[in-house]
Picture (cartoon, rainbow, N blue to C red):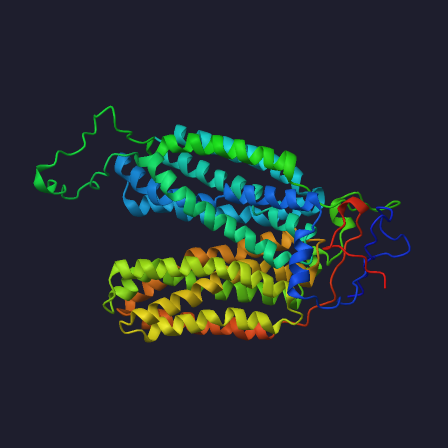
Length: 494
């Protein structure tokens, strides 16, 4: 591909070089030390830092972060309406997560052509409105399901549809750590919001038994139970009332973040060049990229490798219960998984920033089949449980930074938003289907050996694909105005 890319020269006119028809790709810069890597990140332009903060705020109110709500809304809705729990899960979890991410390729394409803010502002407003009207559809399941799906569509468009593009343009030398921070923000928001949302839904009153279950025994010692009618006890807002609070929070956090914090570097075209933003950015055109071996390999390896950790996480209690490990110990193992995922996000992103060869990707994703193999051979060892969960957690975090980092590395920024959105739309169904497929295979075979072997094979294929990734091209470099340059966009004229 005879792509070209202009040098970045602080203070130079904010235009592309009219003597070239396409941006050039410069030769790889010298490898810098860790101290310089950190110093360059700290010295990023003020607008870059505020854009990063705005992006993380949008992630904190995204559907990914608000997934902490569903464990409390689903049983509350099922209890109040008499809906079977599986149907409630389908309504509140499965359908929104399957259909919602399908908007991401279109949101990304719009962001590529018009800019992130023009996508995020209407999307976050519609996100807040749709959340606010969800309770009004309580009596009509078809309408409730439609509104939940629409809320997730607008939510994904306002967050994941734009934040990867913003970080990729502002931090080209620190994309991996930037993408890792997106995952950290989502995980921390979920951890913080979980008890808050539980309190908003259920209040301080003890939860009653599910419909059709046996009432709990009286408290020992004759202690009087808390009366549901006690005016001094906050009974919660219920499954429907909490959506009003969430809608207000989305508007209060999201709209200012888009208006005052979110931005992209200024890159102007010259002469009669197209005025859409996409035409000004270096990189591979969308339809050329999706036919390239690099993007196809990246999507395949992400789809395959993502099946392992999510399948183990959702089936962990039953899987390890069959070898004699109790649910309390398994819950500690899951805590290890979530903790090491944060390590994977930050360490994996940093490694990707500094790696000059794609073989490191194979090393990172190889932790998945190894972790699955340890789960397969585990016959009741708690130590093996923790090691397996640690490996799968690290891979989960590293994988979150892996996709956007590789897409930006191979394809540049011209169609980055559309490519990242398309990759998320393709890998999303794998995340939704894998736990159910493992559960069904277990039900048919009577053992977890068959589904675990299948996962080891699939993720092993992902490692082979990662090892077959083509050589990294020279980096794509933006031509920016003086106010938008910093250590991430250094002068390239040598």
